[in-house]
Amino acid sequence: MRFLSALLVCLFAWMAVPGLASAKVYRDVVYNHMPRISDGNFTMDIYAPDEAEELPIVIMVHGGAWTYGNKQNAIGPKQAEFFTNAGFIYVSINYRLAPDHPFPAQVEDLASAIAFLYRNADDYGGDPDSIFLMGHSSGAHSVALVSIDPQYLRAEGLGLGVIKGTVPLDGASYNLVRTGEKKGELPRFYRPAFGGKETTWRLASPTLQIMDGRRIPPMLILYVDRPVSPSRAKELAETLRAHGYEAEAVEAKKRTHKSLNKNLGTEGDTIAPRIVNFFRSQMD
Image 1 (cartoon, rainbow, N blue to C red):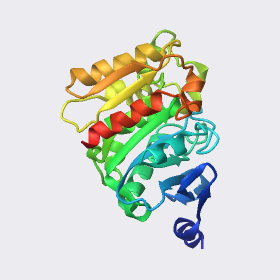
Image 2 (cartoon, rainbow, N blue to C red):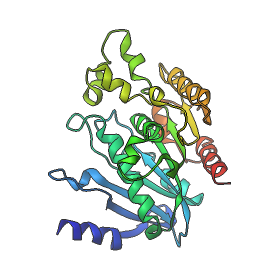
Image 3 (cartoon, rainbow, N blue to C red):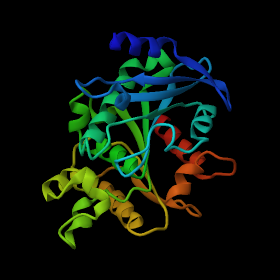
Image 4 (cartoon, rainbow, N blue to C red):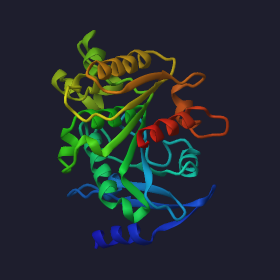
């Protein structure tokens, strides 16, 4: 019965979206199931331009310190409208949260969401060969790691090549070993997700998982002027380039950690158009 309900949501529960004159939303699409875990952890909202056909897909991973937030209340209010108006299908996902579900649950769920969209893109007018990732704060960590470490998509029967480009938005957790080395422990902020073992920190650090010979997608790594974030973003980009991958760390000027996400796609915003241009450059 639960599977049938989820199927009915996927097939029939789309509606017109206020503010999106030429788009539809497929609300609460279930992308995975796990025993004894609510399906609400594995839902996505899919915003698709009207009569979409083979359009590129942007998957947005919300922030919230790995412990709170969801696919609606933790994303900027104009993001879906901006990206659908630009000719993309915009997808915002829920995922399991710490402390009940510590790392790597969040990255595993993102990989499952990617696999669902890759295999079901046609149902929503999407192109499975044009999937892009975007994530804010803790979501920036997830999109970076799933794009660098192939084990998560491999578990879904896919490779890194299904991701065509990745935009982490002001993450500060790309090298957790460096973050924890001074005091021998991570700041309290990180502990619900990553605990106290350096072996876990290393596995969870995108910068430390970069290796030659992988199909790591191009990255546009955005950061704001705040402690830690700029140095971690630059280190990630430099390490990717040192291994032969395409990456650029760019400051989002006149933005705070919060406003980078909140204002993305609003009138006068220059960051979202830059992201769109980056995505389109990977399609050309």
